[in-house]
Image (cartoon, rainbow, N blue to C red; front, side, top):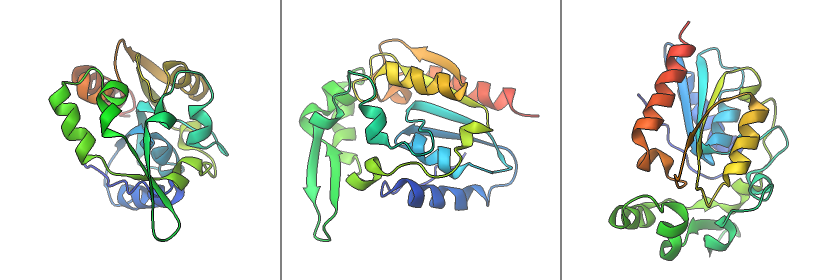
Length: 204
């Protein structure tokens, strides 16, 4: 198992870093992404001979030309825009992070409060430009089997949006009822079961 770093600077640049890592791994790969990471793996795995399955955990699954911020607004229910803290940088760019004051309620409601407080403090900021950057080129889910875990009470990516993207991608879907955006933390068994299913079904 390898955890690829995700700088959260931009879809194309982040995907290039993940792709460089993928190209150095021997054997079949099940590639997993959460939230914005879904957009990254959709680009990074395109054309890869080693990636056998894509697993999206409460994640964005954009089509070519779509940006994360566009998908957030596709269906009602997201609180992400009103939950963000904005940090202007000296180079003219802007970083965003979830306001720790609302992190538990809106991002991780089904995670113990003390754990959510740690995650809120440890979160890495994302470049605002990354959320507005359209996905470029053919997306990996066009040709690679995909699996989606829908977080049923998500206040960041509405479940309706997750289901729309999963259906469009022809994904195998599991729903974690009552799950927040941090579904892989609050529902680890369901998460592992889906990843294991993806590995078994695409092994050959």
